Image (cartoon, rainbow, N blue to C red; front, side, top):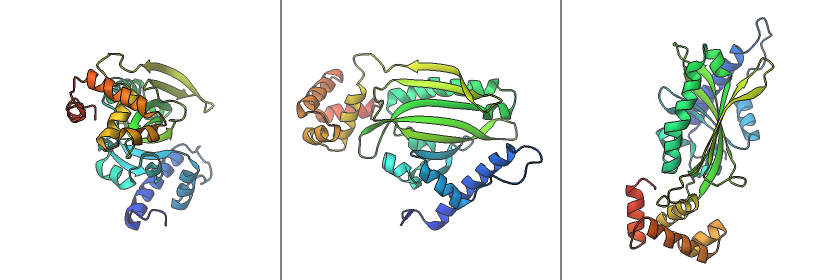
Length: 270
């Protein structure tokens, strides 16, 4: 049965909140005098989400909690809706590699909010769409690559952005090099988005920083996977895994696997 791991009350509650927000957004953008149409109900929302091959969420910036998280998050990350509802945005943060988390925190989010602050009205903020890619660890320890699109759909009493609609797509089959790109687009009067800002962020080239592949192997090692198991999971040879492990020991100045894992945790790499 669908949603078997979430109580009916919780499922209905989160869907009702999502429907309320979506319908409020639709109503705000309806032309004056236009007939009542376009509103959706819980069943229609569920059907819409099934047709989107990714994760749909609604984030409340004021509480840093998820008002809604689509069930598909489990098939993509391995983690359930309940875990994201319970921990909020901290759940997402815990899955990000340290170097990319720093880029998001120190570069991407400040630029995003700066563009929001430049807008003279909430409606202008709603016309912006923020897109960036990042890596995140799945529950099985593998590292995936994801593309996120964020749009503001509601504001607070001070006309500031407060609730965002977020769409996340798994792009691991197309991109997994650790480099990040931020793009901000603005919708014109014809409803078409055109780019107004773009910036690339390259993965840290410092020799003492572990590569994305090494971080992926390291995370699997933390979960007790052997070199043979890692080679099967990542579709690389066992010899390649051995070479990566050898390089990590040298980079981290560790004598053995136990010390490598301990130092990696202490340095925030895991």
